[in-house]
Length: 521
Image (cartoon, rainbow, N blue to C red; front, side, top):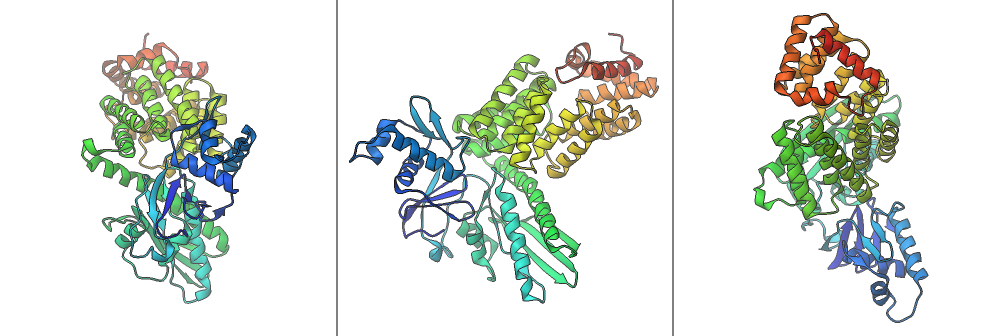
């Protein structure tokens, strides 16, 4: 990023605005052209992020020496939204009859310019930040340099799709190419928590690609993988490996961020760390963990009312409180889940995870068509959105397509193997087998779940139904009795009543298995 000495640089949503030289740069470090007045108005919005600016204050700040009509402001706003790709008005919001608000988080610092970057210290982004270094070409042929460079560039592009990551542009991270620099120094100079480095070695028609993710502050290796491939189609291999590396890095960074938040003293947590702590508690799968997760997400929102991801996770936590832990009334939990998911999408309609949260809330309310449509919107934004695959799996299973649902859930587990909802996904896989009358496989999945989770009543409910269908009456009765003893509410919500996402025939199918297990309600 080219800036003048001492110039103020603003960062938001992957863009850089150089307040001194009047330059706006995209995440890929390309200059974005704006007319002078449009740039000045963007700078005014950025400098007043989170605050409502009415048309009078805008006129006074931008056109203080002339009289202009409202069309001038409208045209500049249109230019700004076009430059930012903000057709949905997620960044620059119109407040009807009142003005405009720049609705994303902005950070600022004094930048020394690229020519003085090495040896300096850059500020840390509020998001988990990562730099993808140029991969080392270890092949004998220097002509293969383009392949190793292309690999790093593709991974950078893939990671940049994630709204949860701040990804350093290629022009900055490639500054270190061919130089022996300690990863801790790179972390300080680029202001990143994580560094991805790798190498490419080609021999004949085979290529070996190695990649490793390092925590910059400590130098600890967090993840590493090696890929050996035939080079029958070089570009296909490049796409495959860059996609695999980018997919693996997301969960690794999420784990590290969660660990950082858990280690911090409670009183010092900012909104991001409160959110990460909430995700950790949500993964505990018990009622106490769920209650703490909801509290932490609410605190994160109090600190940052524009934090869309916190609303999305709060939606999931509320739904679980009503459908799994029964610490909230069922209807109240569903209303809260839908409300928070809609808020998440309104705050960040360009984020796949917010759409996935709304898709799940819609499906749980029984609106499967809207759930399917919203999940597809999430895919359009990011095909690797794990939560969208999870929701798609649920929708398919409960609309009579169990095999396709299992396939979607398998993709979800590959994309997010340590997700807080993995146990629920495995339950849904077991249910898909049940709906296909493959009771043996259903029992096998549930038995494996029970070996890890001994305190989840719904496992025994479905185990009782599947064993009942298999005629294993004694085992089925024991599982049913455990469910009734451990969670009477489980029986009230799911057995005596039919939840909105269950088709009548699926509910009757479950009841048939439970009756064979001894249910007489």
